[in-house]
Length: 129
Image (cartoon, rainbow, N blue to C red; front, side, top):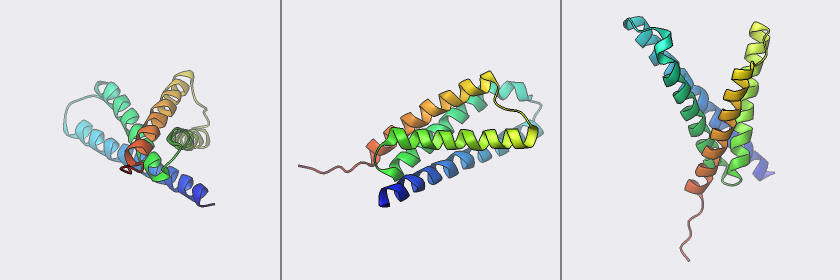
């Protein structure tokens, strides 16, 4: 039972980190777009890179909180993120994922799993024997 709580807690912390990073990034980009003459198309690669970085960090945090099986906790975090995005998109706009979005979310899954693995290994018990 305690292990399930740890996994759920890790996923929750990871999702909070992901959405917080994306919210702050969106705010910064919108301020840049408003204050300068830059166009939205000039930020495409930057936004994509920051999205992948946000999911890596979220996976790292969820793996660190979960303390074991980082790949699984990272995968569950990424799948939860993708499900939330799909629900917003489907319920709000009546559209499902396109092929391009599916590829992005598969990439998010891999990056978040990698972050979970690193998170578990960085926070692992280091006993000197």
